[in-house]
Amino acid sequence: MALASAFVTGSRLRLIVFLFSFILVLYMGFSVLRDDIRSLAIHHLYSSTPNTTSKYPITARPPASESLPPPIPGKANATLVFLARNSDLQGVLKSMRSVERHFNSRYKYPWVFLNEEEFTDEFKADVMTMTNASVQFGVIPARHWYQPEWIDEARAEQGRKAMQELDVIYADSVSYRNMCRFNSGFFFRHPLLQPYRYYWRIEPDVEYFCEINYDPFDYLEENNKTYGFTITLVELHRTVLTLWDAVKEFMEQYPQYIAENNAMRFISDNGGDTYNLCHFWSNFEISDMDFWRSEAYTKFFEFLDSKGGFYYERWGDAPVHSIAAALFLDKNQLHFFNDIGYQHSTIMHCPQQPLFLKNSCTCNRVHTIDYRQHSCLMKYNKMLTGRW
Ligand SMILES: Nc1nc2c(ncn2[C@@H]2O[C@H](COP(=O)(O)OP(=O)(O)OP(=O)(O)O)[C@@H](O)[C@H]2O)c(=O)[nH]1
Ligand SMILES: [Mg+2]
Image 1 (cartoon, rainbow, N blue to C red):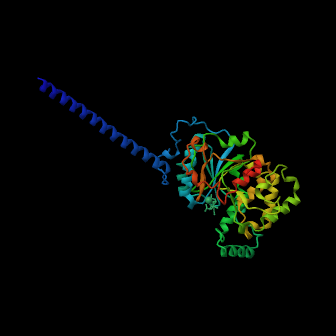
Image 2 (cartoon, helix red, strand yellow):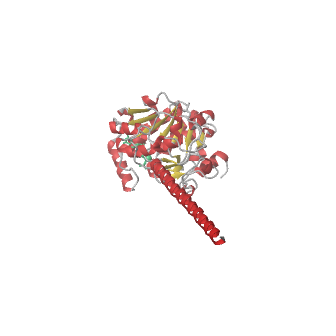
Image 3 (cartoon, rainbow, N blue to C red):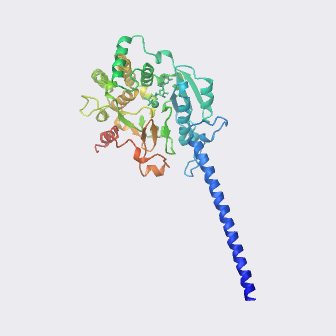
């Protein structure tokens, strides 16, 4: 009897062990499947292949973070501006996916695409699969883009050759120079941008790494800020050999435009005698176009343009914008978007703690450019606060 009852107890035990193991195996199988599904979704979010089959691709949806505010379309008078060639399409889609995922799928600010030639139907169709916001495509007037006739082409060619011998990037490119001049003096004059005051500049192949849970345009407006950046670097000296001479000449002729509490200490280490090459990297800009449309900047651009340096040298829109912002604005009108993780080419700004965690950033904090040799961030901070 005792033996029989022990036998029964033993089989019950075996049954319980069997059932327990079965449930465990089922649970593990489900977990693996769930992780597979999750990683597949993440792969889709970061994959550079556009999802062109769905009208509302998964990449354009907000991230599944509980901390996200509800979708409230942005109220600022603002737009996302994208200068691009038809051949930039893949990089354009990649950047849009990142911007939509981290910000614009909730705020729905309109996109404006500009090009010196018509965008192809393929370009337009693919771009429109990336967003639920409105999209406009514009052609740049020829006089805003091409090398002006009064430029001495022989001198410009000589300048390009000299730069090429020094292995300067885009040394021999006229189209790159057209682009720099357009971004310096014309984009904000384009008819499609006339209704807008604030803009966010986007370039192909850039990446955003943190959730942007507030409206940066609103932030600028409410805090009386004019120019926002995430990365600041030193320019290649060879591309701006005579830029500072022209700036000094301008300052002498138009002292009325220089702001009292300016940021000269950010761009010059000796009170304006020489340029230290520091500039805000203009492939990311969240700024107020009314500044570029102001009398001071209009005069400044026309003055620089008349020197021909966009073609005889290779003056970039980044130093041109930065010098103007540093001289004509109160230094408190500049804003470092420290909380926006961003990468262009191999250079990245990644927020440190506590912002990194607060904004669910996915970049590698160690790789941030901020404390490296070519960054001007420390100089910017010193200029602003007086402390290193
Ligand atoms: N329509 C048009 N857009 C251009 C042209 N050249 C450059 N762009 C755009 O102007 C912006 C800056 O050009 P990039 O080639 O990215 O210049 P960069 O950022 O200095 O250099 P990269 O390291 O190559 O990115 C990008 O948005 C380009 O798509 C051009 O000839 N036509
Ligand atoms: Mg670029």
